[in-house]
Image (cartoon, rainbow, N blue to C red; front, side, top):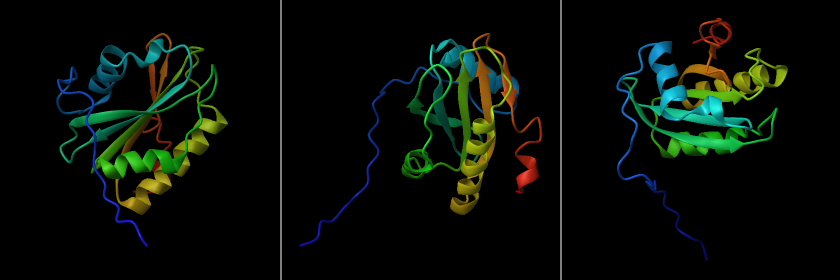
Length: 152
């Protein structure tokens, strides 16, 4: 006996409070991450995935993991389960550093590399990997050309 499976997306928020329009740069991205979802004020590391359509409009976001003061577990399987079910064309990954230090850790760089490779496999465009500090400053891996050196 075999089960037939089906997928469906459950929407928990009926009246979204997020309306940032098309993401066309770091200013708008910072406005969303800092002003709308307040990622910089979290007391522990929180890793989120922003889901975008082909026009760079955020259609939703997921909190993928919530960790401790200085780390959060990020499983590519859990990340991409959400991305694929959401039918995303593009993604932006972000997490906070409660310490206020924007310097990427070795772990941050490794996670970014793994997620970038997964995006290539699934033909999903990874627009950026962002770190948000407790002082609401942001660091863009794309702007530092960290992701550009991996292709695409």
